[in-house]
Length: 462
Image 1 (cartoon, helix red, strand yellow):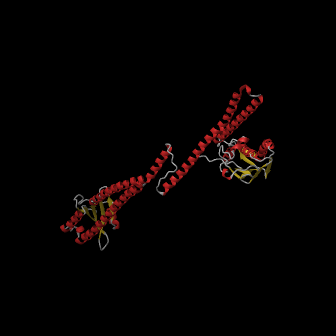
Image 2 (image 1 turned 60 degrees about the vertical axis):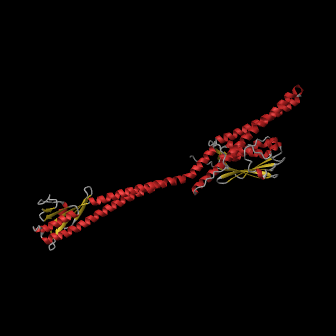
Image 3 (image 1 turned 180 degrees about the vertical axis):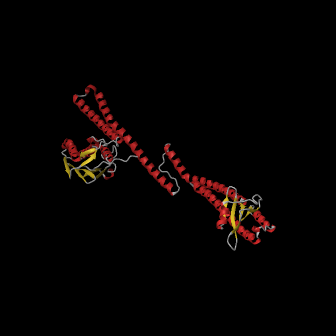
């Protein structure tokens, strides 16, 4: 850009200046020649040169004028005959041209410039001062070779100056580009180090304001990537631990049966096999939930959207979970403010709401209650699941949607929790372009609120 904005104006300026100089020089030469022709016209009239008094003195003046301008002078009388030609070519010959006829008929001078042959021509009428009639015509040509030589010299000097300015601009461009690109090079080096495995908390590159903005955005991205990597590592660790624990329990139970051998009673065998079955069910539950999460991650853009009666869907969920609630004496309450129909994936949304209600039942107090409320406005519908359970500590509420996170691990294992239910619910809600929030007081209960658009918002394609 610096090269273009620097060199192009210089080239344009050089052309404009040379053309302007040539135009003014030619105009000045025309003006000077016209003045000399007018002076010569008066001299011709006063000397009677056109009436046959062709004195040597007048001829000398004519020759001097031709030599002065390195040109040619032709004197034509009223009969269109050339009485004088400094070149001696047209003397005594008839010369009839458009400019000559115009000079005789209108008494006006004319001029022209022959650029290829480098000369200017002025045609001036010789008018009788008494009658105003044309007595003759003066055709004067002046060479512009000297002007062209001057213009050529100016052109060479301008070209030399242009080359010097171009070299200076190129040097400045190289220096500026290196100075401007130096922060980018440092950022590139830092990114390459990160890509190679070098751990770097932040990229610290000082530069101009725009560079600092880019570095700030990169540092935010780096922080986000680090959090994602930490989350991934923690997730892998949790998965390994969760899948390994039931297997370890089953191995201990199986080893115990092998050790006891024939000394184990049938009742003991039955008890141990029931425990192994329980661990197998727990392992299966973990794998099922993991597969649900993976399926949601991979098919986020392929929801089976259709219009669903949310009231009927919620009632069906509560009916299915009622036996589980009856086991602990939990009362299920459904309150619907108005009928609600929305465009959702019924399977995924049912899974999300089921997990919330099931958690509210499992982590409740004996003979407690779970209230499910459904409401809607012109744009969203809202499902709230409130319970009278044990509640969630304030410091844990920001982590409850993380995979395998448990507030009370011992209690979770007693009731068979996998730590994936809320993560599944959150994924399903986000896929519907909705939001889920939690509010809780420890020992008093918990409320989960789902807010989902009534009309599914199709994601923009890039």
